[in-house]
Each structure stands twice: as structure tokens, then as C-alpha cells.
Image (cartoon, rainbow, N blue to C red; front, side):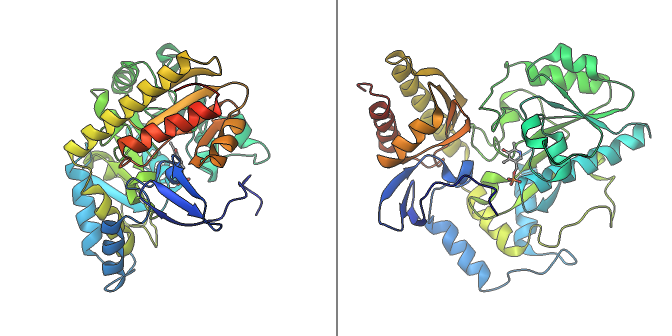
Length: 381
Ligand SMILES: *Cc1c(COP(=O)(O)O)cnc(C)c1O
């Protein structure tokens, strides 16, 4: 259905940070399937894990245990604040689960609690409740009535959040960095202040790390850089490195309110998806993540240097390899010109270009991307 304004490009194969189209044109891929392909395209280790798993067990439903799912759950709980994991198939679905879990938990404190406060400019997915949680009117248009129980406050404004908390408030749902909202990085103490507010009012803090998680910002999860931890976290995008899988994580006391029959997914965490994700997460070692941070810092530094030489770049921001540029006059013009020169980029708004290379991107690929951008913007690099 016509839900996408697609580029007239048919991609047929890839290798690492490169993809090729049906006419044989090669592109350096700084979209990575929208912050998904952590190790680029046709990653040999993941391809092997997927093919091995496909030859033994694809799917069994969650009426039974399966080994890759157990191993993935163990890995995720060992490497995060969480004690429990629920597997699903996408970011929106993970957030739907988070909303249900938060409501059910809040009712154990006070049966009147159901409201979830989210941020203006946020993005939480396209299913109805995730859409209602999304604080951007343009996405709501024409789909009303949306599920009730969501309130929006300006992002990075602790006073506004405090004012909105009332007797019906159940939880606060935020992205540590707003991805689709334009790579908005809040003040470094914002999330700690939100955590303190949540604790004072006995509210759950839900972090949507669908885009920021799995190493994208230079740590496994973005919350690690804020000194606090959430009660609930959602993951998807980078988790499967290109294989569709999502996850909902929570502390034991919260997860406890889900009992058999309260939430489910036929496909969630099936052996193939779990094996595909395991092949990714195992390689997100501290040393690898340090490299992500270094490469991100370097890319931001190079883009900032570019900004000094042109008034067409209004701002450069980001963390790790989640980076955005505000561009004059339009992002699409830069994206289309870069495409012609063999560099794929995405946009989050009319003026904002986003760069999300594979986490495994090489230094010379970063240099090449920056020099293509310099050409596109008529800047001597
Ligand atoms: C992409 C995204 C989602 C939605 O994920 P889907 O897999 O497309 O449903 C939710 N939250 C955030 C922060 C995202 O970036």
C-alpha cells in the first residue's frame, strides 16, 4: 500500500557497509535499514547462525521453551537492569507490551492509575496505542479516536513533566534520545531528574530504546550514560541486526503482574529470530562499543568541521553512531544528491538528515561519507 514515499531504487545485495542496486550501482549505506543492521549487510557470522538454526528448528510457539530464546533472554538480563524479558517482533509491539505492563502494574498501587506521560516530538510506533503514545500530531491525523490515557509534555523540561503528574498517572515513557524526532539529545541530567520524580510519585519509568539500544549510542543501552536505570525498557531495531525481533524488559517486581494469558505473541522470540539476535549481541563487547563511541565522536567532529565551512549545516548533534544534521534549505535535496554520489542517508524531518551507519563501519568509510557530503554541500573538505 502507498504508505512510503520510496526512492526509485531496488536494492539487491550488500556486503558490510555497502549495498548494491539492481543496476549494479554501489552505495555506502549510512541508513543501515534505519539503525538496524549493526554489522552491515550479509554479515557472515549472522548468516551462518541463521542458516544453522534454519536447518534444526524455525519455530515452535511459546507453548514450549527453545534454547536460542533462553540464551538470548539470559544475555539480555545479564547485560541490563532487567530480570525478565518478553519477546515480540517489532518496536511498536514492544511498546504495546510496555503500555499494558505499566498499566497493569500501576493498578496494583492504585486502581485509578492508567495515564502515561510521554514527550512531544517522541516516536513510539504505528500501532494504535504506540501511536497514541507518540507525541506528534501529524502521525495521529485521521486515525482518531486513539486509545485514551496519554499526555504529552515538552521533552527535556522537568518542570513541565512534574506539573503533568496527577492522581491517574501510571508511568512516564521516554526515548533517552529522540530518534525520529530529530536525534534530540536531552540535558545530561534530565533522565536522572525524571527518575527521581518517578520514584517520588511511585511511577514507572519506561525507556523506549528501540533506536538508541544495542550499542547505537556507544554503550549497550543509552540509559547507561545517564547514571540511572528504567523499570521497563523496549528494544527492537538493532536487536536482530536486520532480523525482525523486539523485546520488552522489566524488573522482576514489575514483570510479575503479567500472568499466563495476559500477554502473548505467536512468533515472539522464535528459535530463528533468537538465534539471529544472539549472533549480533554476542559481539557487542565493551571493546567493540568503545570503538562505536570513538567512531561516533570522530564522525561528529568531522561533520562539525564541515559545518564551520558552510552555512547550509545549521547544527550537528548525536551520540555514538546516531547523528543528525540540520540542513538548509532541505534534507531531501542533500539526500538525493548524496544518493547519486553513492551515499545513502535518511531524514527525520524536512530539514534534518540522519546518519546511522552500521556499528561496524570502518574509518575510511566515515571519511568517504564525509567527503561525499562535502561535495554535495559544495564545501572543500
Ligand atoms: C522505530 C521506532 C519504533 C517503532 O519500531 P517498529 O519496529 O517500526 O514498530 C518505536 N520507538 C522508537 C524509538 C523507534 O525509533
